[in-house]
Length: 218
Image 1 (cartoon, rainbow, N blue to C red):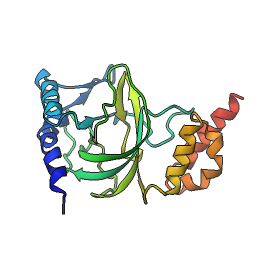
Image 2 (cartoon, rainbow, N blue to C red; image 1 turned 90 degrees about the horizontal axis):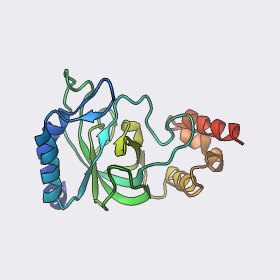
Image 3 (cartoon, helix red, strand yellow; image 1 turned 135 degrees about the vertical axis):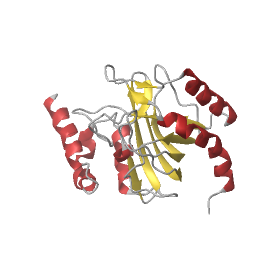
Image 4 (cartoon, rainbow, N blue to C red; image 1 turned 90 degrees about the vertical axis):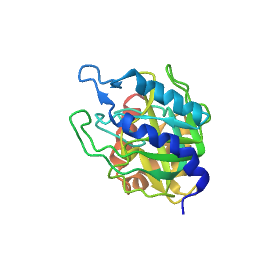
């Protein structure tokens, strides 16, 4: 049964789902754009209603990679946390303005692992994070997850559902590995022993690329 308190917190967000679903990519600049100014105003109004309890994160669906180890060389997370899936909306099909299946969901923040203040946005101790990359994530309500959020043009973004990794809980070995990685100032060599662990969730090759990059700079 869904907790009534969570429903109360999430109702204002549901009002935005249709509006946010119209956000589209500028083909020239890859910026997340909203078609009308009133959409932005609606976001601000909803955040005021919820006392800024939910951080809305843009989905960079055009990025080729997602997960804890993206790109050729290590880069810090803008926001990384352990969370619990609290709500998943129905998916919305692709259309001319939305070239991907949009499926919004909300994750409650249980433990912050790392955070950074960005040029245009920063984390205000919100209790929830919402984004629309839940399509084919194979997640359900109450699943525990590791979430990895990055920076794009001064704001928080999530590059895909692989940036939400299902875990068994705080004692999951993937949690320990990520905590070690962050504590080392993102040195992949300290978690090289965990390559097999990350291979089991399809992230072994990405970690190996980080390790190769680090060694090439020594």
